[in-house]
Image: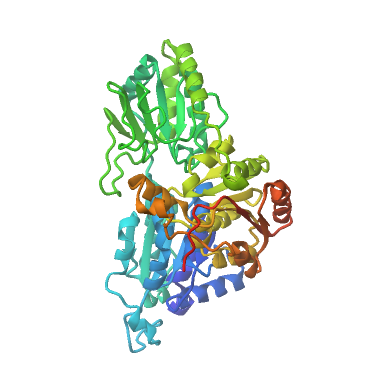
Amino acid sequence: MPSGNMATAAQQMLELAARLGANTLFVNLGSDHPAFIEAFALLHERGVDMPRIVSCPHEMTALSAAHGYAMITRRPQLVLVHVDVGTQNLGCSLHNASRGRVPAIIVAGLSPVTTSGERPGSRNEFIHYLQDTTRQHEIVGPYVKWAYELRAPETVDAVLLRARQLAMTMPEGPVYISGAREVWEGRVADSREAPEHWPAATAAGLSETACAEIVRALIAAKRPIVITTYLGRQPLAVERLVALSEHLGIAVCEVGPQYLNFPGEHPHHLGYRRNALVDEADLILMIDVDVPWIMSAVQPATGARLFHIDQDPLKQDLGFWHYPAEATYLADSLQALEQLQLAAEGASISGREARCQWIAAARQRQIVAAPAPADDALSPEELTAAVRGLVTERTVIIFEAPSCTELIPSVLKMNRPGSYYASGGSGLGWGINAAIGAKLADPEAEVITLCGDGCFMFGVPSSAYWVAGTYRTPHLTVIYNNTGWKAPILSTLGVHPEGRARQNDNYWVTVGSGARLADIAVATGGADAFRVDDRAALKETLQLALQTVRGGRCAVVDVRLAKISEQVLN
């Protein structure tokens, strides 16, 4: 076949991606992408299957939307970014995908290396000199499972298949492929690679000995608890944990939940407060959790038995990390829970009633009265209770409000697996963008994003709502607006509880009360704005906003809460 009739490497990648289930390509295009843009046009003209192109004005939107999509489908989507500058703009979104163990395939261009027109794609713009950095892949090095440069167009299929294989093998995570313009323009023959020969590695369960030991320890315990954060990425694991908890009488605590891991209203659910009951339990079974408690605040009871089951038990991508455990298991939590449940069914059970009585008493002790709002202002508890009134079987909550990490889940008490998601990282601005991917992945879902005012601004709303409006992904955003960023205040008070910052109410984290945050979304043409200043209008406004979403447009509700500080910045 003449080389002119063969596909370019860019086209080959797009067609293979579609066959692999990567049916959405989130892009921010630049001078390194002529091969891709030409391939888009060619495949569109021919009506060939290819990923849907979602053009994103900012890379925070691109990768965070892919993150939201992958959380629901567990399939990595493609993100196409522009050389070193686009890679840098991934910023917080890359941290989130890495820490949240979410599969994504990031593809970045490199400046062309030929300078005299020797090959298609050679340098023909001044920018190609300025963007030719020596170690572009090192920008993402600490946060990706694999970074690789496509060096020959003939290898494009094998490289994409390996990228997908690595991204989907536990612990899942993002991968990064780069390639120069000339390589993407290179012509390739039809692939001989068989995608079925590139499966993700199969995760293992527990050994028979380990399983028997854990079950014996659970039965012997008087006050056993499970602490988890992200086992709910596999909804069936939630069912297995419920069955094991009910059969043996085990309490469950969710800390910083990234998914719904246990039904919030189940009588064995002991809430979302980190550190709770750690010093009271005589057995702690950690399952898929990064930070089960804060060591400076609490320690397990002397003699307590500690076990850890995790797809990533040593957190090898983190710096210093250690939590005590007499046994640590690299295992898939779904398989492990199925094994534990089966072993428990064949065991002689004793003490269950006493354990359940302890759980009931501990559950009662976890109930904390909501503080009275300051100056009659709306409180986060009131706002969350009103949002709970909107929840149906179609609701998907996207959560990003750091100073309410324990409060909001405690009020919502979501019950359905697959109905609650958080980023798993600390790169703020994720939520309003992840909602786009969630809606694309599940068009029938009613997506509600709960975010702080800081998270809203950090999320580049001018990009997020333009994309949401353009690609028809209507969702409801509720801003918990306390006129600033509360998390730095809490951090400061944790170190200097009676310091000058507190005495003078000076934290430098406030936003002007005249800021009309929701209007940023309106300016994109992709959303309508609502504002709530008092409780009398809260429920009605939320209902009106939800009706807007059901009518096909995004709605952003800016809810004014008690101020975190009276400081005025100037």
